[in-house]
Image 1 (cartoon, helix red, strand yellow):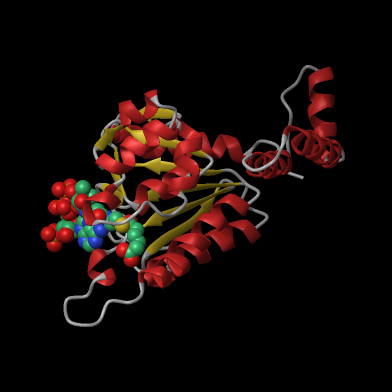
Image 2: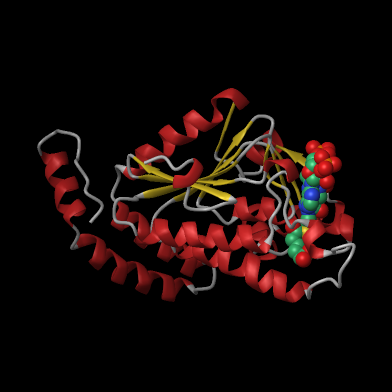
Length: 269
Ligand code: T3D
């Protein structure tokens, strides 16, 4: 299903569903898809749509034009002709629910970083389950350049992804990290030539959408919990979640397919 023109569900976010994949496109290319509150609300709506639609078994998040996302729209944050809205309110309304939505959707959420990802835009990508990137993509913890601290979960995910020292350097220097550097640090799973990123990311996500979605959802729940659990708690959780996975149609199908030496036909339940 493609949505364009008057059929389009959202103004600042593209949302289409095809082949089990919800493709969400941040769509304010004139300002490098910088976040305003309306765009964030729409992104949260699109994520909710994807979470609740049984036809969606994986989500692809990308940006329109030459950028993934330049973070907070600074013209909105600091209007030149009106008092600035409280920053805390922006963070609480814009970024916190978006990150929580990505982490709580029990389906894979893949970021296809097509260009610069700065500030909240970078940390939005790092909150996703797998990050794919164009060879031309860059990641910038831009916050320090304007006297802010990293938000959008950056101080939670980055030290866990790359270690405290590298995260600190990225955050205090605000330097451009190239896709190749991000790949070497494990922030990016796979890089593609710019012209091939979107099609490759679609194929990648379509593949995930044919896989055991229920088990993926439970895997994601376990990974989320592992970030705060002790080993004992995590082993206990694994046992419980494995009971759920073991009761799924896809487990029965996966085992039968293996024994019958044929590819499995997972239904995501
Ligand atoms: O309320 C709060 O502030 C709290 C929340 C904070 C979360 C955050 O994300 S804070 C960090 C905000 N983001 C930034 O500081 C990044 C600002 N942008 C840049 O540093 C550069 O634009 C980039 C490095 C991302 C890209 O540089 P470049 O040279 O490729 O593009 P450009 O020419 O700077 O930008 C193109 C246009 O997009 C330009 O508009 P123009 O001149 O063509 O009319 C530029 O003003 C606009 N733009 C880019 N980023 C933003 C933006 N407009 C508003 N807000 C932006 N973040």
